Image (cartoon, rainbow, N blue to C red; front, side, top):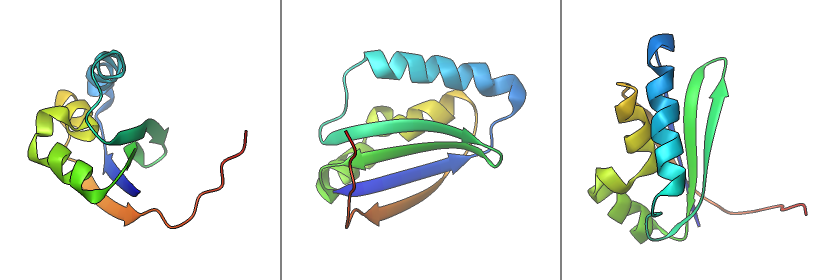
Length: 95
């Protein structure tokens, strides 16, 4: 599995655009290979963390930015995110 993290500062006046894009995203079709996606807010800005089945699925979503959750959300807010990609090597899932 692959974890993709996109982080951006979003102007306070544009947060409603980000939230609207997120709301639209969660009710739409999900990209092939997307396992889970989280929208996070912290002191240092906003983050979209997504978990993908494999690198090929993530690359396909990067190829079609209109299908990648981070691009959709941050573009709506007029923000330019930074990206980090990590290979998931361990997982502890509590029920």
